[in-house]
Structures are given as structure tokens and as C-alpha cells.
Length: 186
Image (tube, rainbow, N blue to C red; front, top):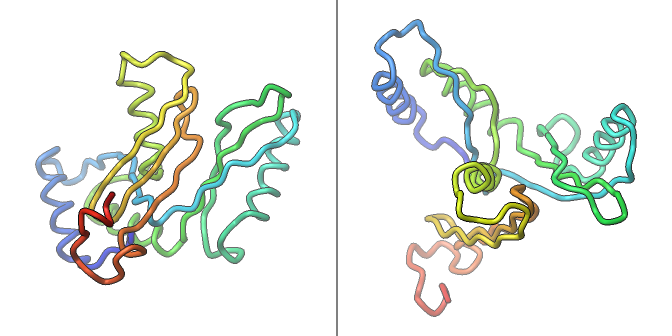
């Protein structure tokens, strides 16, 4: 669920990876960290067309209102993902627990990496599709289904931007069981 369970082992793995990239221990290697979707809460909201200054203020107010965390317990960020036919801005807000983010950053930086930014997996996948998958027409809607060890993520990508992301954790279907039957999977 996005929590480091064995910090010494994780730190050692990061140090080994860093050593494969550069043998100079003084050189900081800058990275973008992709956080598990399980640790992230996202929501799209709409705002009327506003000036840049007013837009920033309106977004920050909306982020405070929709935040799943008490004030000061999480970080938030946003990006514009589109506009409606009536000219409203579509804004994607994302939230992460401050404790998870800070702890992950601390361990990564201890290993000799510099954290340039953090983003959730669906955002990384949308960027990958937008920048590297060349046979898809630009400007369309795409549905992506990602199946992984902790669950299944259903995403809608619109115009190359993540527009919707829903995570179904296997544990909500099978509890503490380690096996997922074919019927439950279907």
C-alpha cells in the first residue's frame, strides 16, 4: 500500500541500482518517482475560464475542499487536463499522504538520488502512451486496464491526459486470502 516495509533492504536495493548507474558516489542522480496508485487519491473538477492568477487561487480553494486529508497531513498538486465545449477548465487534482511521500523521499535521497518530482502510476502511464505510443491517433479517448499484484486499475486517457483512474484492490474482493480464483477475477 505504498509503505516501505523493510527500509534497510529497500535502501540496499536502491544503492545497488545507483551503483549500476554511476560509480561516482558524490554525483546525485535526479529521478522522478512513481508512487503506487494505492497511495494516491485523484479527482477531476471543473472551473470556469479564469485569468491565471484567479485560476491558481480557485484551484487551491477547490483542492482544500476536496482533499481526503486533514489540513497539513497531505500534499496536493494539480494540472489542467482539458476544457469542456462550454469553455470550462477540467482540472486533475492529486493527493498523497505526507508521511508516505516524505519517508519515501528520505530513503531515496539517502541512497544518492535526487527526487525531482513524484507522480502516480496512472499519470506515468498516460505520459508514456502520449510520448511513446506512436500508432494511436492524437486526441482520442483510450481505456486502459492495468492488472498488477495489488489490484486492477481502470484508466481513461483523453487527449493524452489521464482523465479517470479507478483502483480495485484485490483485498476488497478476497480479504486476507493470497489466492484469487478465476471466477472472482472475471
